[in-house]
Length: 285
Image (cartoon, rainbow, N blue to C red; front, top):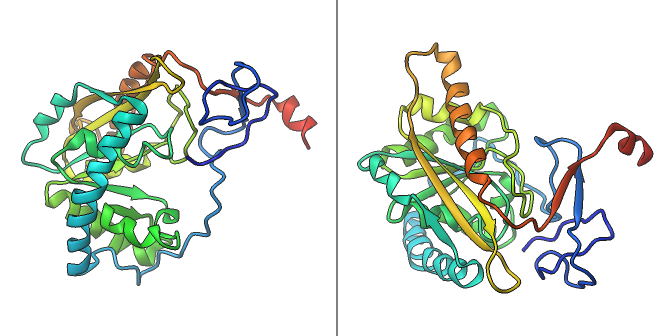
């Protein structure tokens, strides 16, 4: 699990958060901007995703996906989530309404170890592709494998946009799921839903396919590690009665409302996130 800074004297009785526990106080992380602040300390220099980046990968990528994704990653993810977090999915059956078509899945981003696996558990047996930050294909060894696992890195500039768009088009046309974390940045163990923009909802508007969302919540159980319970909602469809420019915002608002509602099921606060007041910002300069 990726480490992250704690800006308080408090400690929490979960080993993932602070290894040297001295009390059961909830640690506090102060933030300035929901849309921009990042609390992962992973130091990765992203590669440039330009017009030469190969989104397709050819036959070798397809072979790799079969063995790595279906043969290793999915089974490992299932065991990891069950053993570590007693993972449970609520309302997975709603995905039956997307049979025979590709679809989009939006979720909250709160766990560096669990988030890569949960979408595959939700959509099984449908394959998952994920719109991802270039960091995910830039790691020395794993970065060469993540494209076979479904990572579609965001392009750097207009020259690469065409290939990026075609990669998403292929995934949807082959009746797969495209997963998007609209919050963009990981906030470890955050129990709310951060505000996010509607930009990523242009994809389902373009393809006119169903949209679903999931909300990972943290709930009490015996032992030190909480249970992750994932709530799935949908389908949400593009409202074609609206002007085209308003369709993605409407879709975003309905997904956001569903995620906010389900986030209320969390009953464990492992980390408290507090917005920094202007006075706090001044005192820290």
